View (cartoon, rainbow, N blue to C red):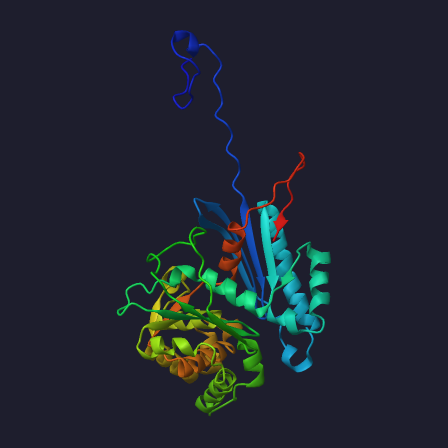
Length: 378
């Protein structure tokens, strides 16, 4: 029987062909990375492999859990909200175990930061799911969001070449704003890449207002007056940001049209989907999309005209976001009012991608012994 052509025989000559084939050395299995983000509104998981410094997404999961529902009124996580979050986290834990993930970084943000029972809930999550969540600071959240959006900080196609960008991460309970100086710029369409220098915010601020907290403080009127209601939300957010002057050294870049906003949030990606007229959400068309300020304002007016029932029917919004999308739009409009930019770059990426990149740049510890390695948390 002839040897299969894909096997190599040791040695040379006819005698070698009679020897036993040497199996190729087994490839070391690729490490799977998992990034888990438990926010005030969403629970998100991303599992990926790393090859040649580039991530390939294996599985992604997202569920609206509204963990921060009622938190601004009571100061505590509500029982029903915790149960919703736990159900989603149990699904995440199952996916992580099923995939055999090697490295995990799981974080919780604003809701668990400020709730009186936030740390008790984190302990309960570990008991019931095995997941060890770390409550990160607003500064760390802002830094990770900037890292996650690094490939969109290239100003591709813009003239004049931008000198600054404002990364705006609109969450359920807080909004992180990070001002980044742009030097050189990356490659257009750059994938999620773990090589090269990661951008860092030069200035940042965390506003204690997000889509859930803003929507709860400003309930939508049953009929009429929606423009005034929307403007009241814009004013509330602008008043919180107005006295922040640390980033004023970059204002000249904004005034001269050499800066833009990178917006990452479900509300902003929903605006983009409506702008494109998508019949179903398509990340490949939304992530990295450039929108003019006028485009955003046109979509906002359409959303106001539709009312809540009409917004529920929109494929890129749906029932879960119908009462939150305009709160997110109000935060965007407030930032645009104080830091005018003609262009917005939409990001369907952020904290999870930042978590993946931060893990990839941190070498795992070598373990001694022959035991099967357990997932390492960072």
